Image (cartoon, rainbow, N blue to C red):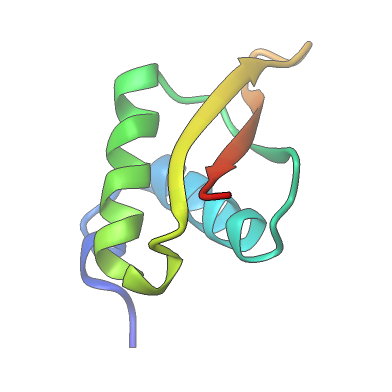
Length: 80
């Protein structure tokens, strides 16, 4: 079954959501994903946590642009 908020996103946000979810579950230090505006990145992270309360331990998200204009590298912030 598709997650509710995921189903309401456009394709770019869905790709970021999927990358973010996989990276957080794997406790990755950096997660490549499509470039999004900071507000959109926050919204994707917020909605991801609503769809997946099991990742309650993910407390935030930060991103840094890469050399490629259509991509960025993000990292999760975890409860320690």
